[in-house]
Image (cartoon, rainbow, N blue to C red; front, side):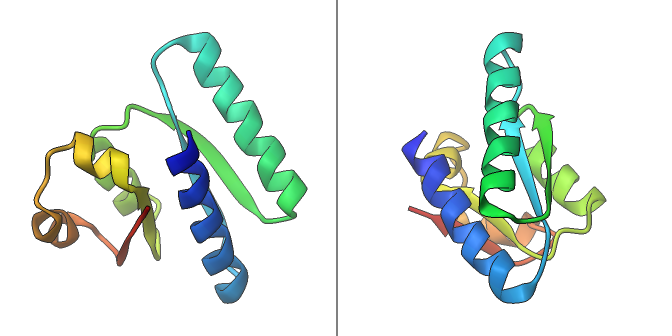
Length: 105
């Protein structure tokens, strides 16, 4: 989505500045669309010449936070529509995040 692309662009800029790797989460659901999204994300990482990994995941708050915690993410970048869909108070979400949180518009 356009929001996801803006989130990826923000994450890319930050990863380049810090020299970090990217963990790109692709939504599960329809198997064909999930595979397509993962392939596109992997191609994007290669085109941008940034080290990273793609992970399919159900995009609910608990799953995203658990993955960030398990992977010991240094920064979590989420697109606004995802946060809005979770109907979360941003302060509560920031407290629940295991690392600094950026919400990209």
